[in-house]
Length: 166
Ligand code: SF4
Image (cartoon, rainbow, N blue to C red; front, side):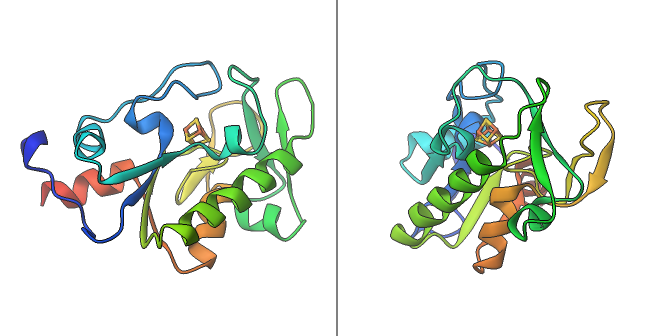
């Protein structure tokens, strides 16, 4: 499918999208992971971009962080935490960012979110295992888990692209 033929899944409510996917340089290292199809939707005004980690008060750039002891659901339950490569516990910032993202989602009546794969905030279905070794485990990031709990359809950009290609 050509980028300029992309149509929003829910025309009446914007797609919530990880801000780094539409070119905003909010990744931990200061870059983005721009996705052409989502950029096209953004140019049409059909997406609402946000970065939970920045909303939670973390700076850009920032040390990378991973969930240790579980997944995003476990963080929401207080059973796991988020730690960065400097050994700092950033669980409170990740939780604050997830709650703010949820407030934005409710305010805009968001039905569907497309979030960056494998991020400790935005990851859907797979995240890094907390060892900073590149190993993946099943589970969602903290914001993805919270949005799912609230009934919002959450997909990674990789799943979304596969669906759009069909
Ligand atoms: Fe992108 Fe989400 Fe990480 Fe922000 S928290 S940089 S939106 S993946």
